Amino acid sequence: MLDINLITKDIEKVKELLQRKNYEVKNVDTLVETYNKNKTIQAELENLRSQRNALSKEIGKLTANKALKEAEQVKQQVVDINKKIEDIEKDYNKNKEVVDNLLYDIPNLPDEDAYIGVDEKDNVVIEEMKDYYHCPVENPLTHYEIGKKLDIFDEELATKISGSMFALFKGKGAKLVRALIDYCFKLNQDKYTEIIPPHLVTSQSLTYTGHLPKFANDQYKCAQDDSWLIPTAEVPLTAGFAKTTFKQGELPIRRMAYTVAFRREAGRAGNQNKGLQRVHEFHKVELLKIVEPQQCEEELKDLFKDCLQIIKDLKLQYRVLDLCTGDMGDKYARCYDIEVYAPGVKRWLEVSSVGHFSDYQARRGQIKYINKDGKKRVAYTMNGSGMATPRVWAAIIETYQQPDGSIKIPDVLVPYMGCEILK
View 1 (tube, rainbow, N blue to C red):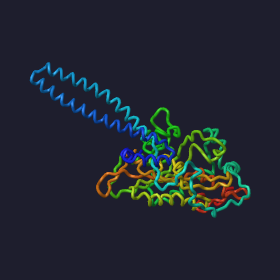
View 2 (view 1 turned 90 degrees about the vertical axis):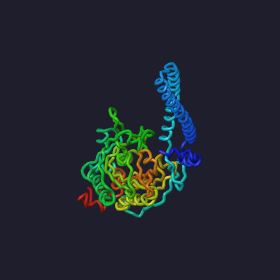
View 3 (view 1 turned 45 degrees about the vertical axis):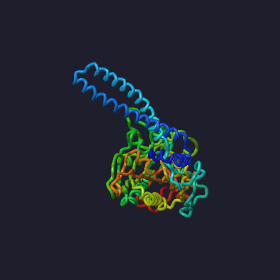
View 4 (view 1 turned 30 degrees about the horizontal axis):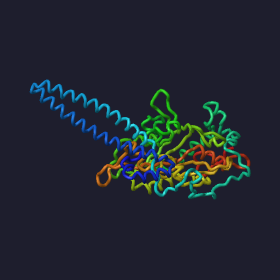
């Protein structure tokens, strides 16, 4: 969430930046108006409580002096003040709820130098590599067609088991998923600490990262418990540091985790869901950092390189998008998407979002550090997908298909697969 002091200090600047994210800025006016109203109410409450304390002391003195009639009169004044406090507290709590809800609803502020735009059409391609491996087949098949022919991917069986938009890998197809995960870990094992977190988290954990309360419809919830299936390892990794204050020099913290990710993808429909283009459940390695604000720029560049390196090693055609303010999502201050080209479905597929959230998540989670002056400050968080397997798997199968129907294994994965060709 945003710092309320930042909002009230420079409301017009905040509104200007939020408009870049297509946010309804009249909510900011409502927030500030309600917050200021509660400051007045708070002052009134403090005054009434002070009066009550003074009268309570007077009652004690009167009682000690056996002035019982006068004591009863003062007691009635205390009763009247308590009733007034009770009524005013109701207004205060009602206003506080409005303020809290709006703070959870307002998106993060985009970086000043982020491209200004309305939606995905305004994203900017800042890097593109089309000179890597090209599919040698004139009319390439889709990954789900190839998967069925080679018996390595069974969409129909997945649907039979779980419904639409689920995946089932078989034989060497399943091994290819594990090979991608293992290779990602090998690349990053010296820089990031590996974590195996729980796949179920509390509502509070999802609130820390900005997935709740605003985006509850995008999550899977367990009906009988306060438990949610994680949409990404970002959630348990971040929540693990909630209410933590790091000592001077302990940041940056770098973590990576392999988990299954679960996403409802509510409202999504159409042919672009076919195969592995969009699924409810998938295997992913997430990279996460907690940094001091002045470390953010360099650590984000480094994180981006780590996420892109595996795509380069796989020799897949890729491009990088600098997301505009209207498409980067609520929690991001800056975001880059890495996409790979899948010649069978003839689409660019997003395989990683890499970005930083400034202090948006850390403020929710009370993640702080001690600066060089010995003062507590709110940290910054950032994350990126080191390996989101479904679309990378699809791009490999489509890109490396051969005229005889086999699949060439990318060189870096051969040691993990134990073969050079899938037949």
